Length: 227
Image 1 (cartoon, rainbow, N blue to C red):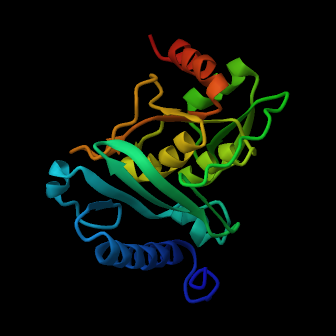
Image 2: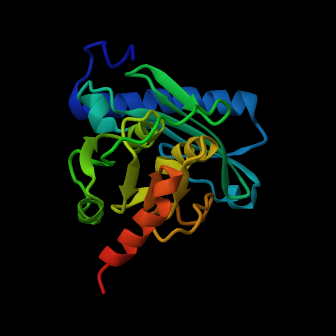
Image 3: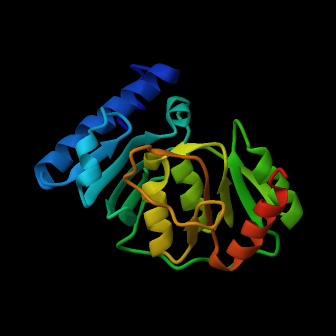
């Protein structure tokens, strides 16, 4: 936040500086506090030795660099611990709010509204999400980073986060861990579990939603898929 407000950078340059600053701090903290664990960070060179590790920290030091560079609040910091591929522990910080949500302190879900709300990218909403929203009669809610979207469901600002545009493990491991701890549904869009610490870190799709909506959303995703 100090860097964002400093006036030293703006736009893409600010986003890059924020990424580097957050990554340096987080990596140093993990090396000091959890030296025996492996780490997968978006901003670090991947070390294949993590594939044989049971405990792997999966980090996105700044999720939503565009929003950070524009001095918006819908960006996040993701830190998660995957144990044997499962998103076991996680925290998603929303410094611009400010608020941090973590798996150790799950908060109760607010009551669902009369009309559902579906989160989509504010710059490139996926056509699949738009089609599912139309089928469910859901209102579209544009927002920035993946972490901000996922936490919006926990905070009661939306009900469904459906993403089909491609992500990487660091984009959603911490959000998934926090969402699951709070009792939300979190899976791939075919309903299969989210599995982490894979050789290929590309994770193309994600569904985080209120648990009572999961079956309806998954059915609509399947119905809207190309034949």
